[in-house]
Length: 270
Image (cartoon, rainbow, N blue to C red; front, side, top):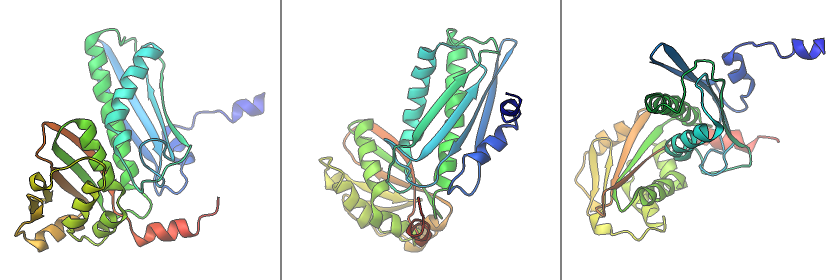
């Protein structure tokens, strides 16, 4: 028993984050805190994930810790809503696995109770901030990633429709390799939208890369290719799609697909 006890001494959250890394190049940590009355509530998290990242079973481990006081049911409801807006809206390579965990643990030591509306809303916002940071770190540290792409789909009939289209764009190998070369190839994006399974109206679609309107009404615009190229060459770039169908919108975070990704996975023994 003494030997077991010695092996469980706390080394800190940074050491824990380091210990769960595989093809990650850096540990992933985030934290937030807020005050409710005299109580200070802390939310912290660590994550592991670099390849095989896509909603619905990813090679991702996320551990979240808080000293808020709440029931398992209260915590689960909040966590599900937060995950839907963060970890379920990222993709590196479109591949999945059975190794997928988001675990939230709450000690209750702060004394702040989730049954109080103000505590609940502030806790949910803090948990969202932590999970958003971790999800962005996962994509930014994706295998071989050079460019992180922020996809915004607007004017869909629903958020679900917007997400379906965003995921189709994020999974397209042709789109992702174009991004690797900072190529503003709007035709590949339009093709991915068409392959999403959503019944689109091409004549209503617009696409922006950075601040450049590259497609309107389903056809090419007279845009500045050099500016669009420079936007995609940045570490972060926004790609905006307008569907002209409704008021639904969805945001999704993804990356390019580079030769480095191929090298990592062409020689990776399991």
